[in-house]
Length: 138
Image (tube, rainbow, N blue to C red; front, side, top):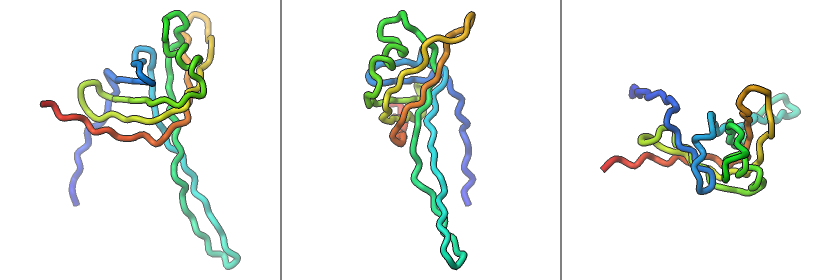
């Protein structure tokens, strides 16, 4: 059996592209998560059969609201609600792989708590992310 070494991921200098624009300066968290459920069928004889459904995906984004900057992430999400767009998430700028998915845009909250940054979160319906291997340096 092979011993597989691990290279733990620390998110830093992340790149986040939604549609054709980069929004990593506005986001503090990005996560694509699968969800699936086991299904069990029981026969009259007491035998059971269990299987698990294919995962459905969401991409969750936490970001700071910005209603003053033209084309800010806040404005983009509000304006493009319901649109399906490509998202690229590259956990380490300059190295490692990236992930792409198609998400359905939903806007985030407006407003927040006084004397604090107006941070909000959204959950986009998503396709299964595709792993895009890093291109070796030449």
